[in-house]
Image (spheres, rainbow, N blue to C red):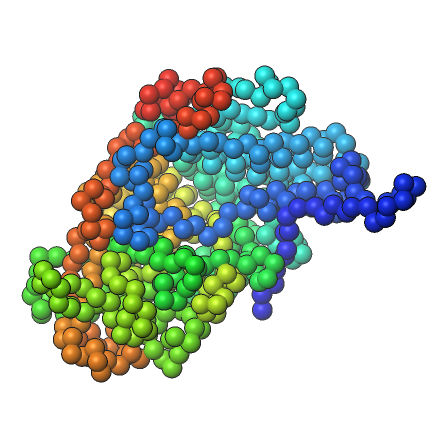
Length: 594
């Protein structure tokens, strides 16, 4: 049974109930009254949560995780981003609201105990650090506004950028102060609020980023040691509070709510705070929008075999039907359990209660060959199965992680899968990565072993398939394992940035895929739509065809260089505030590494 704590945003302002000039509306709320009533102060803080709490990301389109529809690779990923057309605008609405709240707590609120005020201030400081790190991790240093600004004093609103180092120091200071105020845990009625462990985990994330090559090209060991200690402290503290790796099935991390792996969470529930999942569902099983976060070949091959060893593909051998059949068997069966928990593959069970897939029908978004003017073309078998007439040109492998299995086409706006922004697995891997960078390779490897053991990979004779031993090899193992463990959790893009590993994307060049193609089109007429690709007899009906460029456009390829580590400031911001400097890589004078 779902147990939800509702953090509703906003305050209800009551109007006058009569028209007599002598009428005194004792139920009306004035702005000053907010700070005299506990529930109103709590409502103001809840409004901050409502505005800032992160939710399920849908941003695989710019990485080696996935794509949306063909032709939708972003300008940034293609290396044609411009200051004039895009750039970052850096809104300060949330910072302003938080500063206002903190000043009211410090100077005017008398109806709360000191402990209550400190706990509220701790939460507000966390969210200020959260907002500032989001900005800094995008463009580098930004103006640090730590006091509520007087909008009537216009000249005072225009300030210059602080150094990145100054911003990081302030973020850490806010988090340290928050940690000193926040409770170890909250009661059931406040589940989902920021607690001490959440703030410690986020501090570890911030310091790990700051120690990473994007910010630390000279590899200053002191930054890694600071990050290591912060993450180790977070791991130890969270363990003491009963947190740890979830020991059930990997996919149930998102369905067995309030489990031990949840560190920071945004709770979703219908009808008051439902999640819209239309975008990540296949078009025939959605409405208004669909087909985002489709997996591409790089992610499909990243997951190892069930014993932890790599799944290898020789594209040139796919024309050999014996090899093709062998590889298709290796692809669909005996994989790391996280594979089928994360990615829906054609011809398997799609998590839905929609009538279109009733009676045991599978979602057969596979392909057949049909005659065309220039020979043959791929056509979707879905046309035959569901009468959708959707045509071709998509990956066909969809996000499965976190998809609410109770949805139908009519209820795609009513999903209730909680978003876990920080999992214990991330805190553990942050600690392990930092350990490796300061020479504690054994600690780093032990973390990888724990992650794979929980995934369901046996230890065997090869340490869960982890063959790395040297520091550099372990570093690569973390690149690979984070890709697998956190697929579709919005972490890949920033990981590639902070590692300065755009070479991974550029080497791929195009977004590629494997199409499961039925060998004999005559079989379509009598095809059993309840059959399953995990059945060897069914797989024999199909082959894999390699599609090198699923976007089918020569100018859609990854083309990123170091200029794209930090985004530019939008031209509108600089035109409005002459004190704002542009980043050096984008024609300005501001160095985001200082």
